[in-house]
Amino acid sequence: MTDSENAAKAEEVEVNEVEEVKFKPARGCDIGTSNIVVSRMTEDGTFVNRFHRDMLYPLDVSDESADLLDRSDYLFVKVKDKYYIVGEDALKLVNAIGRGEVVRPMQDGILNPSLKESSELLFYIIKAVVGEPSVEGESLRFSIPANPINCPDVNNLFHAKVLERFFTKMGYDSKPVNEAMAVAFDSNPIAVVDGEETPLSGIAISFGGGMANIALCYKGLELNSFSITKSGDEIDRNVAQVTGIAQSKIIKIKEKNLDLNNIDMSDNIQSALSIYYDETIDRIVSHMAREFVDRKSEIDGKVDIVIAGGTSCPNGFNERFAESIKRHDFPFEINQIRGANEKFHAVSQGCCIRAQADWNKKNK
Amino acid sequence: MSDYADGKNILLGRPQPGRPSGPSKQEKVVEKEAKVDVDAIAQAVVKAIGDKMPVVMQGNSTGGQGAKVEDGFDNSKTLERLADSMSGHGDDSESNFGDLGKVKTTKKDEKDVQSTIDLLSNIDEGE
Image (cartoon, rainbow over all chains, first blue to last red; front, side, top):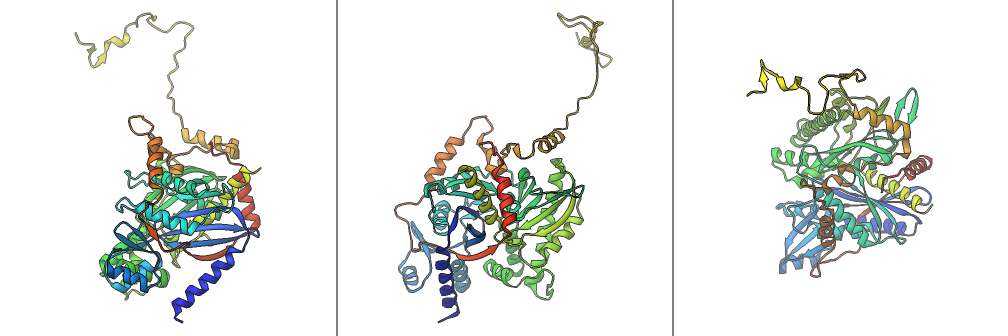
């Protein structure tokens, strides 16, 4: 048995074990540009997170492609005249074939307008990752981005409506939640005023693939939120461009080997990743500082900044982010900057916590 | 005839129809710059009523900004119908999987999670 077959079997066992656990009737769903993550909470307070890479590799329908799919265990969706290999296999296939690029049903945090079948493909994937509701009208919260400040034509309303209809059709009682607020619900930023701590007060940031989402909150209420495009995918695109290496390979290297505290500058890919990480962090922090000043955002005391999202996962990210924060002026004092315990799952776990609150309120 | 002389509007000094030519004895003219700090008021309201404050749904939260287009017409029904028509799949499409994804479990402090849920359960989102 090969390593991948072993891995697949281990995964299968894990999934089957999870199915026997008793879950609370609420789900959180992070519909990201790069990944879809669904979180449920068990009766003993454990989060069970299911995640799937939100990417596809298109193949024209032909005898050859049908034969390839017959002989392999690739998972696919067939829409009109194309097969779309889904998830991790899409990335493996594009790296193996060495030509073409993966496509995504999402772009810059919302449904990809340049992919005609984006909503149909996304629906297939969501149904398979989220699963059926365990009780009638199970509460579900799904993340949506704030409208970006550097892309005024992008509006999240239609995206939110389409997703809400998806989940309603599946039988959920669903509502959107701001992506950065979901990070706050998961990681609980604190504001310290005269030595007293106020929960769910401060700044939460989700560094996703398509964009960074930022929210300022007070006692769980959203005071201000916005997003900034050009996040992790932009780093990959730029590095691919300057090194001449396919973006799909850059993604693999970034996710497996990147340590921002230990960059080998003789390695072209690592040094380019390091440089573009710096630029991306600085761009986001600079926009953030200006936006909070322009909006006259104020909050008493010193506030925490909590960081989450796949783009913030490499070791050393928090330190670089903190250095950038020092170089910019904010209209409030910073208490501490910390990463979420589970950066990759923080948004969906936060959505799950919010959905649980909805369920409790509904069933009082 | 011009209303201006030496750069000043001479009409301003004239009595308005139905108005006295100057301030009455009872009337005090107070010239004070009215400067309203909306943010400060909002902060004060948040502090004063805390959890009970309904969340004002900005576009960022639920996309509300986009519900009204520039001419003032509410197009949210159109968007809902469009979303409805797009939230499914065609009869000619198919997939070869029932469920997807890898699973990872994590554990958080139960008390922390419960206190967050309790706080959020008391927030009125203004529905």
